[in-house]
Length: 270
Ligand SMILES: Cc1cc2nc3c(=O)[nH]c(=O)nc-3n(C[C@H](O)[C@H](O)[C@H](O)COP(=O)(O)OP(=O)(O)OC[C@H]3O[C@@H](n4cnc5c(N)ncnc54)[C@H](O)[C@@H]3O)c2cc1C
Figure 1 (cartoon, rainbow, N blue to C red):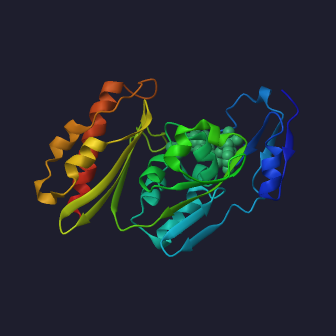
Figure 2 (tube, rainbow, N blue to C red):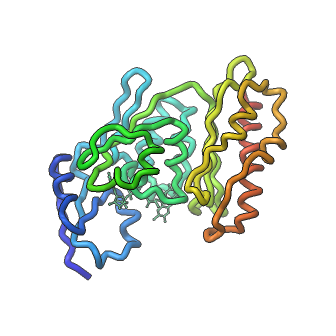
Figure 3 (spheres, rainbow, N blue to C red):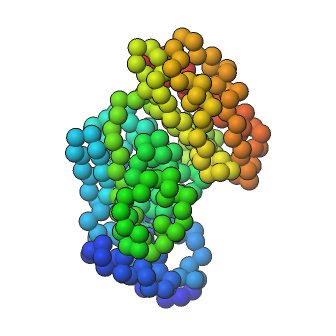
């Protein structure tokens, strides 16, 4: 194995200058780096000393620095918006020691199929804040679809608006410690017992994430009492590889059932 150099930048500029060196990687929580083959790497840029542990709220806009952990997000959001989809998505993610290490930035840059944060960020229309070769605020979907945005760039934070939409999250796991085979997130805007609008995302699919537009269209302007939950199940058409925990056909059937159940619970608990 190579001798690994460790760099400890104190400013974002130092960190983004360092990443242009050959064969170095940012190190945030380090949870995705341990299992990696490190032979091809010369060093790590430790991000702990950067001013990226911040949290800001201005009116309804919330911003988290990228070095906030899942645990930090859960405790902060709990104080300001207990209905928030990020809170619901992350509060049972992985386990407590991991939630204390896994960071926003590492999770967005790595974005594994079992990610518990990506679906929530998509339905929140979150912006990813970047510094380095790419600078500025980028919609999360654009960031995920364009790998060039990651090149020599540091995720410095996320930004999104709070809303009064109702939400639910469902992680498909076999045991408490499992990574999810898939994760459903949904946000519903409900007024006068009518679904005005909805955003539904399933992650862990062949496409990494799918918008469930058919169900969103079905729900639009529909009275809660007129929703046929068995109909929702039939409208979900997403594919799974089956390379992970379970049979893809089983997951395909289950994901529809769980989405129907989730929406039922959400609208009946109003
Ligand atoms: C046993 C186990 C179970 C897990 N279960 C889950 C789960 O159920 N749900 C879930 O959501 N996650 C889970 N995770 C976490 C997930 O798999 C990743 O390990 C995690 O999201 C990476 O975040 P990190 O902060 O540790 O990043 P790191 O491991 O530090 O980095 C990951 C990658 O991102 C790059 N990077 C890091 N920070 C930045 C930045 N700010 N800007 C640009 N690039 C950056 C690094 O160079 C590296 O390539 C689990 C991890 C483990 C080990």
